[in-house]
Amino acid sequence: MVGAANTHAAAHPALAGEWGGPQVRMSLGPAGGRIEFSCAAATIDAAVHPDAAGVFNVAGRHEDFTSGRATADAPTLTTPARFTGKVDGDILQLSVKRQGAAAETYTLQRGRRTKLIRCH
Image: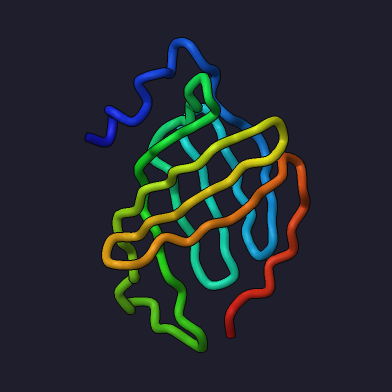
């Protein structure tokens, strides 16, 4: 099912570049991307190819960070996730649905620089 999400790859170019919003920043490239949040991070496993309406749906992984110190051998809190949304010009509406959690929605802008305040 992971590969099924990018069926429009030949017709629509992949999203690329830096995107930012309140407490979230995303970097996309031809092989997928990385998203950073205040207390979490995520990876997108494939290029993000929106359809003709600007809609996309891709798979990846989400990792929650814990506050305070962690030992080097502490297990990571990584779960499968779906990244869905819609791009309209330089605005991207992103929904992140982690396994076992409610979806979280973000509004990002192409080229926007974002400073993250990390959890402590």
